[in-house]
Structure formats: structure tokens, C-alpha cells
Image 1: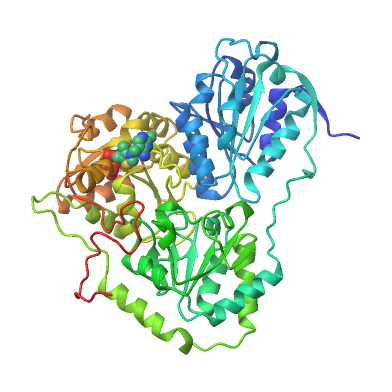
Image 2 (image 1 turned 90 degrees about the horizontal axis):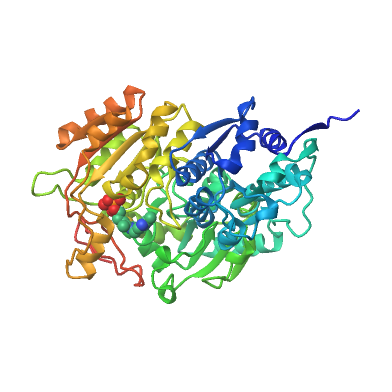
Length: 574
Ligand SMILES: Cc1ncc(C[n+]2csc(CCOP(=O)(O)OP(=O)(O)O)c2C)c(N)n1
């Protein structure tokens, strides 16, 4: 008895994807992709979502992956189709998102001849993939597909490219699902060494001014419950990175919010003053550390990460731990539970942090010209969705206001381009997220600039009836760049004014979506409620104050205590 069946390589690939549990693939066809699209025609469990630009396919697959933790899958034809995926692949690489990108290639015998629509996809993407394959034998296709899923989703997740010449897709092969994957040389260490856990637990127990610094690795490893236990077992104040938002509930008394360039005063000062910094699944990115030599100057560092290459890359830790965030946090909790400790040890520190939180809350003022404060719009979104929406953003000021004024409470609720900072990410990512989580309210908060980079994906949302709510914080500027020009370049607004723009309400309607506008405070809540209740893809044009800046801000490369706009409430300075 054998379960093997004879079929074309392209059909075997579809079967392999279905066997991996892939239910949605985002893509755009072309000549050499036709055999695969023909196989998709008969697919029973795999749905194809036709985007309007391949970049949208990569971001939608990425949004799907971030919303679920499953591997996101996208596909594009050879040459320009494949190269249009490149930004999305780099985006997934920098944020460690599990993505499989299947690109189609010209016939094997034409490769290297500058054939029509030939681009060396494995070459182009080499520095931005976790791994890549150029398939040379049809019989390899199923194994390669299964390996790609395994590599993308295990250890430190990341994108895998599979480039397939059209003749390989056409070749006939026997297919049977792979049972077990053996990859010599690829065995990520997820379980930490107990000696390192003990050394770390001892330091945590002895610390007088500890801080937990939690990154996106806590989300990838589904470690939120263990991080919560760890924080609570020693009452550790928690700062999350941009990528870690949602890993620890911001409603919790131990939460200090986000740290870094646009982080809270409390979190940044706590890191500056702490005697022990416990970094879990975080990578000491420059947007977090500011001037590296001045970062956490009084602290001993414990650094735990599943990727050993991260440890010691920017900061030399006293206790390095290789392991995933979940195993590390649960190991630490177990050790700490068996040790003597008294809250007296950190009482003064906790009081100092509580005082800072009280004295330096996030703060903004209503614009003098009567226009909408962007921060108010985010607060209204937070209120109306009760801290529970899936919040996607684009890149810029609106993104930072969202980190500051939306209250993140659970993992995978926050979907935003961190490492690459890709304008145009938000809308397609929100479509992927809504497809993955149809029961959730899914928003895309974006700027008027970034929205115009991928707004054609409104057609995809309408086509598949994916009711995402696009909230444009419309300031008529490429706001974040204008802010830097304002603060550091004498207000010389070179090429950042984008006041000439489409009427976004009419534009939404032209696509078949709902279009709304809000210009006053009273209109914000009702517009949001109407858009959410409509069950249709919707765009709300929020006319916000044009020259509002994001504060607090640590200028690039400076010490994280050199914040502009920290707004002390009670006038008490540290
Ligand atoms: C693809 C891409 N191009 C350029 C940039 C540089 N950039 C970062 S923020 C920003 C301005 C974004 O403007 P907008 O989308 O209107 O959002 P706002 O900052 O006004 O909220 C630019 C141009 C980028 N991050 N991504």
C-alpha cells in the first residue's frame, strides 16, 4: 500500500501547502505561474486572494502571520512580479515574521540568458531571507515546501523564498506528505541551559532596581503567560519594545509602556537607572538604546534570545541565555519560586517608578486652531474598541501616536512594520489580519502619505468583502519627516508637503468601500462606530492638526534620558 499519487509538480506543491495547514495564499499571476494557478483552480482547502500589487501580497501574508503565528504565504510570477515582493520579504526578515514566498522562474534552460522576465530571485533576496531554495528537480518540490514551512516557523522565525522554474512545476512526480523533517545543521536551541537560568535567577533575586525589557521574541514564542508570571513573582517593572507591544498588558500596574525613541519617560528613566536589565526576546535596537555607550549605564545585563547571533551583538551581557522566551521565562519562574525574597528589597525602586508614572503621563494639548489632535483620535479608537481591536498601522507619526495612546492588552493585537519601517505596509497587512481573524475588529491606522503607497488594495478588500477600517490621520504632510525637518533642520520642509491629494471619501466610494470624514472632536466617535458597524471595508479621513509632533522624543543617537517633550505634570524632575 502506498499513499503516493502521480501529479504535476505544481499540484504537488498545492497538496504540500494544504498539508501544512495553509488555508490562504496571497498572490498575483503571470505567464510562468500559470501551472501553479491551474493547480489552484482545483484546490479544495487552499484559497487564493488576488491582490492588486505583489507588494500587497507579501504584506498581507505578513499580516496574516503576525495575527496568528502561522506561516504566511505569498506568490508572484517571475521578474517584476517577484521583485515586487522584495520589500515585503525584507520587512518580514527585519521583524522575524514566518513567511514563505513562492516565486516562479523562467524555464531552467533559459536561466542566465536574460530571458524575458528573468530576475535572479535567490540572488536578489540572499541578504534578506532566513533561507532560500532554487528548485532544480520536480521531485524535490514537496520536500522543499515542507522544509520551508519548518524553517520559517521554528527558532527565530523569518522569510523563506522558494524559486521554481516553470518546467519544474510542469514535471510529473509522485507525491506523498513528508513525515518528519531532518535538517542537519539546523537545530535551533529553544530550551535554555539550566546553569544560565540559575545564574540569571540569582541576579534577579539580588537586584534592587530590576527592569524587564521585553521584545518581539516574547510574541513569537507565545510567552505572554510566562512573562506575566515572571513579572509578578518578583514584582518586576516591565518595559516593552515596539515589537513587544501586547506581550505584557498595558493595563497591568507593573507595565511602564514602551521604551526607546518615542517611549515613555518612566520606561526610559527606569532603564537608565536600573541595576539589572533583563532582556528577553529583544535585540538592543538603536531605536531602543539611543547612544549605545550611554544605555543602561548602571546595569548588569541578562540577555535571553533564541538566536545566539543577537547575544553580544550590541551589548555584552553578564548572563547570556540561548533559548526561546517561553522556556526562559518559565525556567526563571521555577527557580525564583524556590528562593527566599522580600518585597522590601525593591520597595524604594517601585515607589520611584510609581511616582514617575504619576508625574510624567503621556500628554498633549488640543490644537489652537480647533483642528483634531491625532492623539485624541487614537484615544477614541482605543475607547470604542475597548483595548481589544487588532491594530495595524503604516509608518510615521500616526504609528508612534498609536504606540503611545492605544492600550495594548494581548499578543498579536499589534501589527506594524518595526525593523524596516515600510510605508504602505498597513492596508495590505490589515487585510491579511482580518482574513486570519474574521471575528476581530481590524483597523489600519495610517498617514495620508503611506496610504497612497498601497491604497489600490482597497479593491482587494472590497473584492473579498474584508471589512477593515482604515483610519487616515490626514495632516497633509509626510509627517514624521516633516517633524525631523522641524526639530533638526530649521523647519526647511523640503518635499514633505503632500496637500495635493485625492478626496479620500470619494476615493473609498470609487472602490466600493464606505467613505467617511471627521474634522471635529464630536465626529470622531460616531464615524468610528459607523465604520465598524457597517461590516464593509471603510475609510475614515480624519483631518488632524497639520504640524503636531510626536513627543516625547529621544533624538537619534542621543542618550535616552535626553528626551524632548517629557511633560512633567507635577513639575517634579528626576
Ligand atoms: C517606503 C518608505 N519610504 C519612505 C520612508 C521614510 N518615511 C518615514 S515616515 C515618513 C512619512 C510618512 O508620512 P505619512 O504616511 O503621511 O504619515 P505621518 O508621519 O504623517 O503620520 C517617511 C516618508 C519610509 N519609512 N518608507
